[in-house]
Image (tube, rainbow, N blue to C red):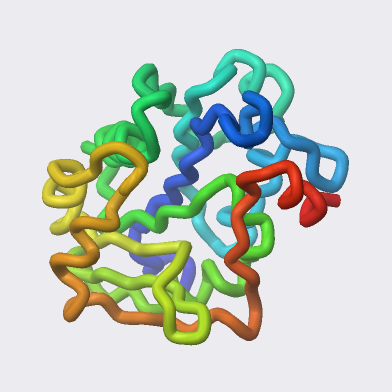
Length: 200
């Protein structure tokens, strides 16, 4: 598939969390390789070939805008970010309406062990707007995940609290194509002080 024929898949980076277990330090602003973590995460999506990237901001959104160089990413503010990941996922999906995207690849800002190789593998499994694709690590579903546009309304309707798309994916587990990425990525989260050791 040439670049001209590439399907219009949008990247969706969820970066709104307030870092409750990190003393209230927003994950988007954690330093990684000398820059804010959100900048690194957006760069991973770009490197994997996504030309449209929407970034959902929440906690200290103004500071993120000021400190992170996010280029031509579409910045989406979620005023309800404190309600959990579900609200950020809904805000992100809402922001894709009218863009012509036939699918979105969703990644989380606090998983720096997942790089462009894993993202590219998940993207390569896209077929059409009914696609449901997930990275897997030793057979266990993880991120990133790709949602064809046919699923967006159903995901938004069930995304509550910190569950994100979990309920929807559980209901549709037999339709999900798992793509093993354990050989090219590590799916750890930056959730606690101890996890900060993963950052450089």
